Amino acid sequence: MIESFEGGDADTVARTKALNAAVAVALSENGYHVGPADPNQINTPMTILVLITLMLFGTMTYGPIAAMLVELFPSRIRYTAMSLPYHVGIGWFGGFLPATTFAISAAVGDIYAGLWYPVILATACFLICALFVRESKNVNIYSVSEKR
Image (cartoon, rainbow, N blue to C red; front, top):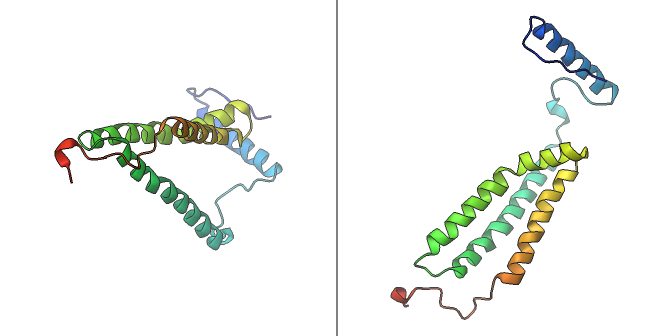
């Protein structure tokens, strides 16, 4: 067990060094590497493959979103109607995603518990869109003043 302390006294520096040493010992006893990372142990091809896969998932998401959002709103309000909820959603849900998933994982005590947050959020978005977004195949997406 590692005991923490409250800083602010004269022994803070010495207690911090002792705490760091105790954490390093506990990590190494449990099989974790303590110290700087070894660049020679990076699996470069697999790292590139994972990054390309994540990039492809992102493009498969944002490509159809742009087309769908264009069809949802008439052109006279399209920019505001698309931009405001899109950027608020990306900012709030995407921006707070790391903090939220970490908080869930820390509260539950399972490092994988936080992954349920994006899964549940994506499922909710899918269900809402499936139920409430209508087909726009024969709908005029131009406003009256922009007849083509």
